[in-house]
Image (tube, rainbow, N blue to C red):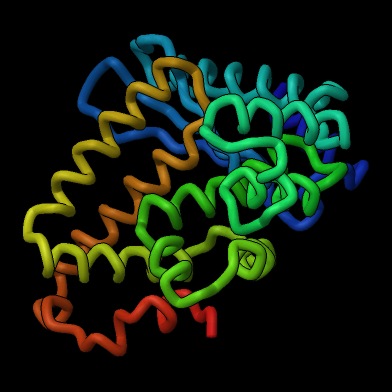
Length: 250
């Protein structure tokens, strides 16, 4: 049913026309409980939240969670409209110490959020989620803070990264950044990976969208693999690992 739903969407060219279809991933395990993930066109990821005694059961459960979210995403309330933006900004203001005036100032977090929503007017929340995941990762990675220190405005950063998708090149850049962090603070990679795995498991069992947590795990695992497979990786030059070189911003 999930496959047919997204095949129908692609035939209508209603969403993600250039993306592949549904992709399943089962974690290797000698026995139950089994874990399965399903990634939708556009990158949103869901997993089985029940305790599954077979790989097939885990795959079906993950597909069920993804199908429910795919159908829910079709509701008018899940599309970014002026009314949706107004409500979302008001919620953001209520959860911070800001004011509604901040919504018109892109240099504030509320203003940046407002700008991102307006830039994605008409899209569904699953379509908007990929951009949000990129900025979640940039914040977690420390890249946003570093870009602010180079005097890049939030609007410039948002406009730049809105042109890109979360691909292997971006993951590799972030992995290199974590290799540099590991040189400065030995052990931080393993610590972050343990935290990412715990967050991923908790989010999966709660039936939440998982891409942010899964991407963190993939980036950290890639960084550890590069460290242990390439002895030269432990001493890259500052130029190679500079933020602007990694992100290609300038």
